Length: 100
Image (tube, rainbow, N blue to C red; front, side, top):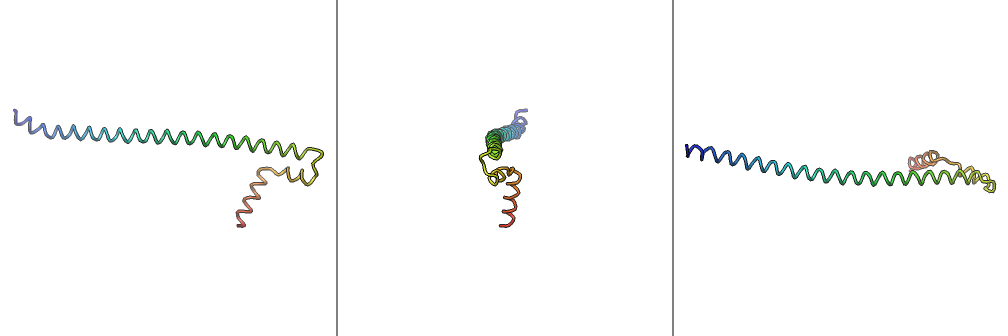
């Protein structure tokens, strides 16, 4: 029974070592993926924060333009220019980009 255990022992040891190596490699890949996901989530949160700040800035600018255009001391041509909406500005910019 002794030599048979030795003959079976080597394949079993190799199988255990291979399994342990595979498990360790899988764990490392999972840990790297988890870190990458955490970084991506942090970048996503930062981008959302920037988008919200830009939305607030655009809303404040639109409010300022509305206030400016409705003020009685502002000449009519300036008031009309100030009444451009964000969509109008986008259309002008897109048209300009298409011409270039």
